[in-house]
Image (cartoon, rainbow, N blue to C red; front, side, top):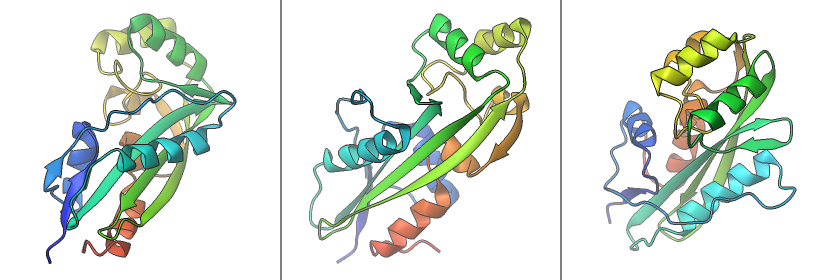
Length: 191
């Protein structure tokens, strides 16, 4: 029986990242879950829980494998949500300016038998010390709205990052190394 892959995400970035490794989802389904962190929940646990809950929220047939992910930007113990507006984005960029923060990118795969497997990619990033004019210019670009932490590393923000350790694809939204491992483990062959 051929296995079909279901991407449990409405993120165009995750679909594009899968295509980079030659994986085209059979179908895409958007999970509808509560994405609020629990009181006192730390970033790594939150990212893994979100990826698992997103995968479990997708109804699948017996020949389908589900893949879902979550990418969380965390400064200290503070989980930064998607920037909903320019004021929120400004606050995030001011907070991240000149300091290191972590990006936790979790991936969860449910195989055809219903077995769930997860992996976590941890990246550390440091923005240069941002001037008010740099923050304003980035906000005016419009690219950070709707992004965790208020920035998109695959866009203009990349030129503002002076140090990074970890997975670039993970920061974008899907750690490809971990994704390939989990898909192969689930019987969905990725070369």
